[in-house]
Length: 389
Image (cartoon, rainbow, N blue to C red; front, top):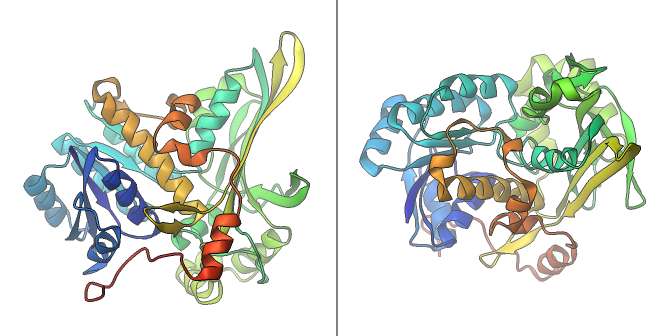
């Protein structure tokens, strides 16, 4: 078994630890700065392959001491994006593989610089968007002789919206605010440019249901850099229910809360509930020429909550954790083949989907499982109080 350090025992880190731990291939050191947080998750998993550690990863000395004492071969950061750079620096110094979930462009560029000349893999942006959506779009791009446009659209939505935002906090609040508030990368008329978040509003219809989509930051990952010279148009937008963008524009721009993100975070976490009953929509569309004809191909999928280790996990947890775990698995099976900065589009979609973790992206899911388990009160618990049973 290979030892892996997972930093952060939150919504995503807890499932990453569970998936890796129950695979039979990895021993997971799950660490969190809140005393007892990792132990709560480890107890809920009930796996002897997942150990819990109280560790503040923002304390360089404490993090270094843990790595020296426990010798993981890889570190997985499910921390907020602004914590990742020191973790990557330590990984480079001691020779660990590095994986993260960041959507932040500046953090990714810092990791790229750290990874220069490294003998181990540095793979940021490993989740859903950026992450899986880039892998799916890249697969479609390979089917074309020339490419005109690439559209990436992803949304994590409540199945049954009933608040004014038509939204639930299904993952990191800091990450959501970062995506909604920072400049967005795009290719327009063959040139890589920055575009404003919450702009570019459009309607999109999937399976007969109407959604809206608008610019958000980070979801394009490194795809624009990889194909910038060969594509006329490329952009990433977040999918939401109609009306959401207008409400967020009011909060972030009208009320100026983009400049007071601590207040915005408190407002959202106080007013917007969490849910296990969500759905993740993945939509990639590529237009270009095939055999001299203008054609379009799409990858469209809806992923619903699923049961892992006897407990219900939300669709955003499933897709994000499965995305990074499949990448970790592919890299650690052939570690010598992956060195330095690794872009998501270097992974092939068929390899991801056939992977034991990537199988959670399989088509054909529905909301029936989550509806039945919630109705019966049998969703299970994702963490157990250290003093509980």
